Image (cartoon, rainbow, N blue to C red; front, side, top):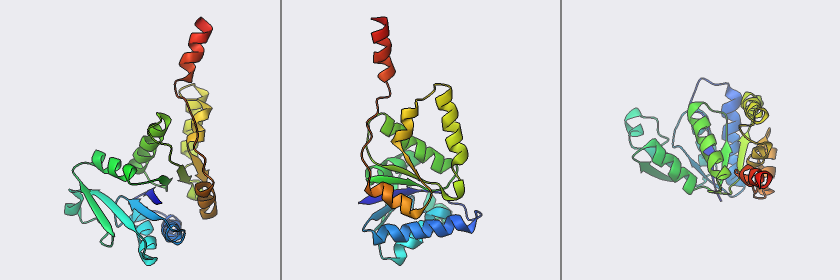
Amino acid sequence: MNICVFGSSSELIDKQFLDTAEALGSALVKKGHGVVFGAGKYGVMGAVARGVTAQKGELIGVSPKFFEELDVLYDKCTKLIFTETMRERKAVMEDNAEAFIICPGSMGTFEEFFEVLTLKQLKRHTKPIIIYNVKGYYNPMFAMLENAINNNFMTSDCKGLYSVANSLDEVFCQLESYVPFSYDKYAFVSKGDEKNG
């Protein structure tokens, strides 16, 4: 299947983030998967792409047209799709993927993760979302989500919408054993009606 990988475009990050990303790209191809990504040549995105290319795998890059002017695109994609906007880019990536792996990243990666998570919460898809938590990078985000749960902004059931992998083996174990999770965001409405009925 085609798996969408989200991640940083920074070259300033610890080398371990880049090495694990390249190993992920390589391993995905060895497992028979294609990769969809944001078409960038730098950072985690570029490292994943190099791993895919090294194994002669299918690599679908998706980029808004204005990125051509920035000279940031990976030039060995097997397919490169251009969009008009960043919003359209995300939609194309989501539509061309059957699973999502969230590698360490910042604003863009956070946005991409929370979009696919929200869409899953609203039953727009049932695809696996795996957070690859290299070096515990996402631990502060998990603490933020726990805070939201503790203050009733979301329920603990939301944690079933994604899984957390701390190693490459865990990524593939979760991908291969995935069972769609059923979640009703508005279940509290019917429960409230029952109480008031």
